[in-house]
Amino acid sequence: MTTTLVVGHYVSYTYLTLLIAPAGLSGSLLVVVLTGYGIAGLVGVALVGRVLDTHPRRTALIVATTLTCAVTALGIAHLGSVVFVLVMLWGAASAALPVILQHAALRTAPDAPEIPSGAYVVSYQLGITGGSALGAALLSDTPVASLPLWSGIALSAGTIVIITTPAVFGPRQPSRTDRLPSRGSTQASRNRC
Image (cartoon, one colour):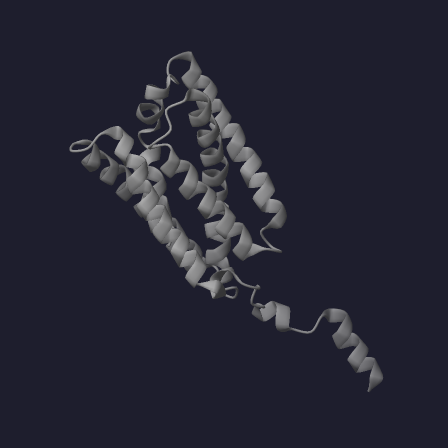
C-alpha cells in the first residue's frame, strides 16, 4: 500500500513544474504555488494530527481520496486558479499521507514497532524511486498531461487497499504494555489481601 500510494504521488510530483506551466503558473508564480503547496502541507499535517487517533480509517480514506482526485484532475485542468487550488489540495494530502502510513505501519505490531517502521521507510523510498522512474519513462512516450492519469491509477489502487484492509485502519489493538495492570491497581489488589 505505501509503495503504491507513493509511486502514484511521485509519478506526477517529480514533474510538477512541467504539469502546471501550461496553466500559466511558471516564473514568479511558481514560487507562489510551491510556497502554497508547503503551507497547505503544514495545514494538512495539523488537521490529520488532530483526528488520526480517533478516526484512523476515515482520515486515511479522506486523505487518499483527496490526493487521488486532486492529482488526477490536474490532467484536465487548464485554468490557473483551478490548477492552483488542486495543487494546494495535493499539498495538504501529500504531506498528511506519510503521517497516516507511518501510523498504520506502527499499529500493525504495537509490541515490536521497529519492524513495521523499517518496512515503511523502505517501502516509501521504493515508491519515490519507482514513481520518479515511471514518470520519466512515461514522459519519453506520452505528453506531460498524461502523468496525472497514471498517478490516479496508482493512487486509486492504494486507496482500494485502504478500503479493503479495515484491520490496519480500525480500532487500535492494545499493546502488551496496555494489557498489564497499572501500578496503582496492583498495589490496591495487594492491600485487599
